[in-house]
Length: 240
Ligand code: 0O2
Image (tube, rainbow, N blue to C red):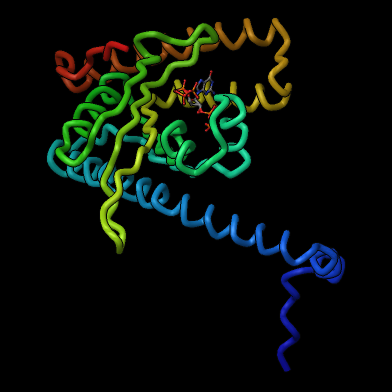
């Protein structure tokens, strides 16, 4: 005989739920359903952009025998993280206001081998007819004071739902492997110290960002020598 499946909620959780008055419970359930409906198009927006990038990657590898994209990652902003941004931006806590004010609920990160590839992929993606560019922040040409480098673009993509099309903003972050290595370590350190990072670690991080930038230049130089390539027409900083 099969053992009984593990219950979804513990007895304590069920008792706690029974103590909540029914009106509050149905409000919470209604909010959960509204949130699920609100977030769904953003998930589809991520799917659309990820598919576009995967197509570019495969086609490039096939035609040019070269792959400018190392890997692609994506994330949907959590409800908690949306809430923090609502507070930080002093935004009205309604779905309509959040839809207008917070443009990075859907996020796609594209990690490229070299800086010229970052701009090349950016150009190829944003030149697509159904993509509307809302905003570009070029932290490669203009790094943040802590050394953060990345090319950010908010694009709007059409998502076809059963009751018609909606345009969904997706934040695309493009960066090199070296920039990504730096940003993920910096992110972990920032969280470990809850934003209060000691001065000497901040200094070391900024210095490490410089080292990562030098590595990017050196690696691209070697790559060009090996390929006998004079340089990419796409290696142009984007003005912010
Ligand atoms: P998470 O967890 O990655 O989502 P805006 O959205 O333009 O109104 P914001 O958030 O300042 O305002 O936009 P910006 O500058 O484009 O940065 C957004 C995202 O870039 C951040 O998202 C990070 O992912 C990344 N980022 C920006 N600056 C840094 C940095 O100094 N270090 C690291 N590691 N990442 C950075 P979130 O929402 O902060 O977090």
